[in-house]
Length: 214
Image 1 (cartoon, rainbow, N blue to C red):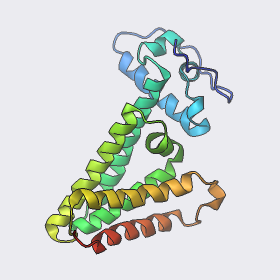
Image 2: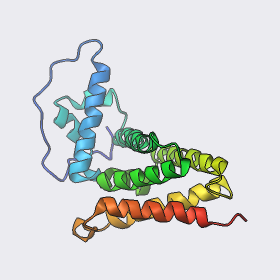
Image 3: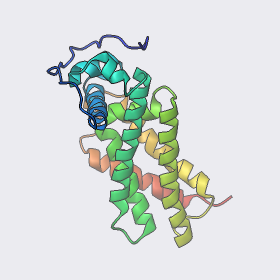
Image 4: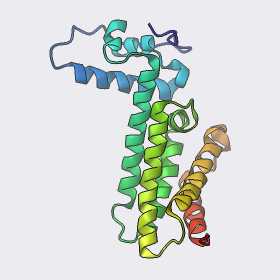
């Protein structure tokens, strides 16, 4: 058993005991386990995600969970990767209807901030939690996604300079803005979160446009 697994600090949600899985049910069960881990994470934080708590939430035995995940950390890795998939969808959808790459960059920057603030616990786990292989993969994928949009702006003449340096500056501004809030009590957040997201995206993208090539 994973030594990191312990009883969660909050009462576990115990589902009725499931019947033995039939052939072909494995993928469905794995997805249910990940979804249960996400619910635990959103409700009570990283410490609540244990193998035992996930098993109880789904209504299966501990060995059934270990058939799919070797450890608690592996469960968290999987949640991290799913978070990136959702963030990528948000950003992709945000700029999909724009013919102007700079407008698309702004819209995707807004989506980044909105997503982070809509999922503060997951975002904190992925971007500012312990450095895990999954977190590193997520951060790398996010950077590549932004860099692709920056490259389109460079090709259109909307930005000037080095592709990587510009992407790094934009990513730092977006990540910094999200991190500034997710570590603060919710009552200290601005009342207009969407307006905050737009303002930060404007600062990040127009600031990048003002950078003189070195």
